[in-house]
Length: 320
Ligand code: DP6
Image (cartoon, rainbow, N blue to C red):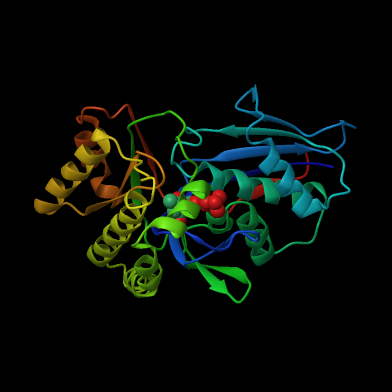
């Protein structure tokens, strides 16, 4: 009745933006991501306390806004006739700020809930459960470089490269620790209804996936860089042209992008990606990491820097 799981967030290089089924939370496009070993969420679940409602504590503070989604996740994994749970979540990075905290949280939660109930599970079932609550969370069920595909009325995840085959580093420049104004879920639903670029976005995803998959296979950094930046900017163009427009960037985000472009000009292997928030993620090779950190630290508006290599799949323990 108790378990703990630890899971890593992932960042997409080929992005998920838009849903083909909002009830089942199925993504409209395939996506490809890096699992970040340096960032984690630990999730403890206890179903043995005879509570009269679920309780959620995030980083030591009782949390109401995220409780509904957490309860829905437990209903999905355990069933609606379950006991109420106390869920204690701890995270070593800012949450709801565009750092994919929902990916580590909900992957950790499904793994912990399955472990607490001693349920038979497997990678694809865990991914489907995590993905039903948060699309990106499905990808955190595997480590390294992960691909998510849409298959009839479900999803399938696949590891393209393990955490050690092609070690990449991710330097994260945090430019604002505040929570975002609009959730990615709400924003992508608005985009699908109102951006004139949305249909082009959907149509052009499969060539980007193909290119990125090949770049990973060949460990071709330049090819992965080009397609990832292109895909990221396309997603942000859809966001910007949503009505009302969704702009997650701030001045420091843009300054970091320019700095990364300058580094590329002098031959540094690095590229940027941004999600539903103003933080910049600079993907580079481990041997270049120090130089990238130094350059991004100098930029006005960068409040802190985190770094990460690639990480493994979630782990769990039912022995608390
Ligand atoms: C920009 O997974 O947070 O990070 O399924 O509605 O919970 P929901 O959305 P979420 O969206 C992630 C969007 C993104 C791109 C990505 O991770 O692929």
